[in-house]
Amino acid sequence: MASVSNTIFNVTTLSEMGKNYISSKEVTKKFEISYPTLTHYTNIGLLRMVGRKGNKRLYDEEGVGRRIPKIRELVNRGYPLRLIADMLKDELL
Image 1: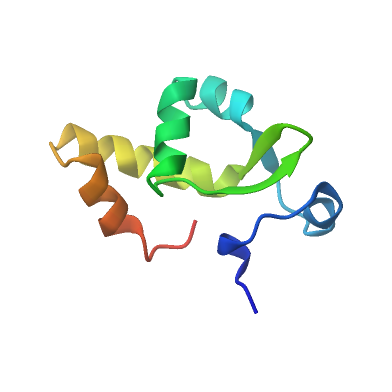
Image 2: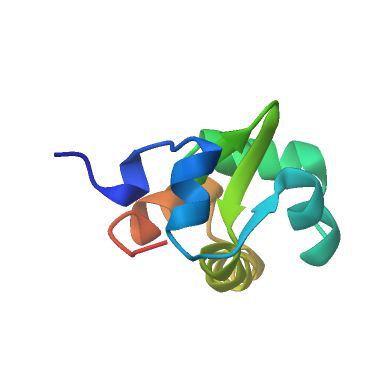
């Protein structure tokens, strides 16, 4: 059975889970990152989308809120993104 973090759900399933989800557009505004940065973070595994609503990617708001500050801190310390992805891969999103 697949874990929640590795499965992309449809909108009906997401709404039944009782979590707050935000679109990629909302992530870029709330956390002040560019859309290409968000896409790159998603592609290399720093952030995981949890579902889609139509053509919109959805992210767990709480998980993104915990991850982005950690990513920023490690980037500011000089760590490359690939190493950060490896460091945070076992951490729950």
